[in-house]
Length: 336
Ligand SMILES: *[C@@H]1O[C@H](CO)[C@@H](O)[C@H](O)[C@H]1NC(C)=O
Ligand SMILES: *[C@@H]1O[C@H](CO)[C@@H](O)[C@H](O)[C@H]1NC(C)=O
Image 1 (cartoon, rainbow, N blue to C red):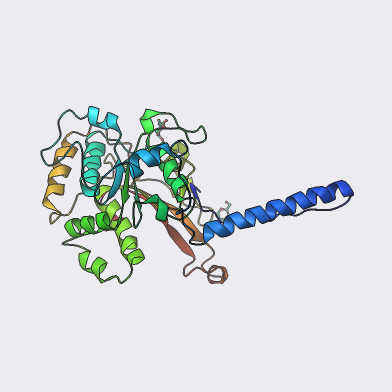
Image 2 (cartoon, rainbow, N blue to C red; image 1 turned 90 degrees about the horizontal axis):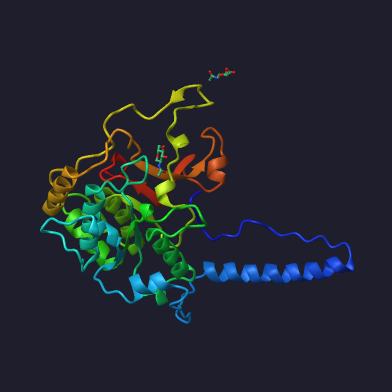
């Protein structure tokens, strides 16, 4: 899977056969205790209040989150994308002041410049949410994860897999105010009532993650995830080849359509958004025949439906998809 969560999965065993090995065993025990201590501290609600985040270790976190201003959260838009857009629609600012303005700018730039995950129409935008943009109140490890997402969005290599600038992504970190502003303006005629009826902030954010992908598209990933593989490379040629299902011997394939998976926005959308859709689609420059993938999801559970394994494993359904990382093209039917 593409993202990892920090739960311990391996057990360590020490076989003591001689004196020499006893020393080893003792060292292992110390290691196990250290590892347990590490996981205990990371799974508790410990935060970074006492942690000093050095500018050397977290340069991008400092530049984009700590030292930057902005209402509704923080963002990074690759400067080269702006250089490639000599003229912007009147409603957009080159220097956004709110997360919503940043998302609108990113949306226009990705669409007009066809900056998508290869093989798809999923825009190269990452969305994450936090209650507050002050890293001191984040759980431990999260500053490091955000640094890693930012580094990836700036075209840096992730364990040597990804080449530079071609894979830059926009990054938008929405805080509670940003989430509210987006929902109020964009979901006015849609799910705003539902959103407002949710008593808890985590439930609101569960709705937001789908809504934000519905309007702007891209990758949503929980703030406590770390990217292990660049989203631009999530689709490999083999993934879109026809395949045979062993259960029913049928062959499945993506539709042989000459149309890319571009879904229209509803006519009662936020007016400025409809205008951006119109202006950006006029400038799309890629041939649309190869971009067939519109959604990428993770499988959380895939167990036999006719046995009790799934509920014994704690799942409500035999097949479940994750909601902590989802990638969608705007207005994909999964999000509507
Ligand atoms: C993009 O995807 C196509 C089809 O899967 C593949 O042939 C091509 O090499 C990919 N390009 C990059 C830059 O990954
Ligand atoms: C699928 O094909 C295999 C081998 O050809 C055969 O043994 C099996 O019964 C087939 N399954 C179904 C569901 O038709």
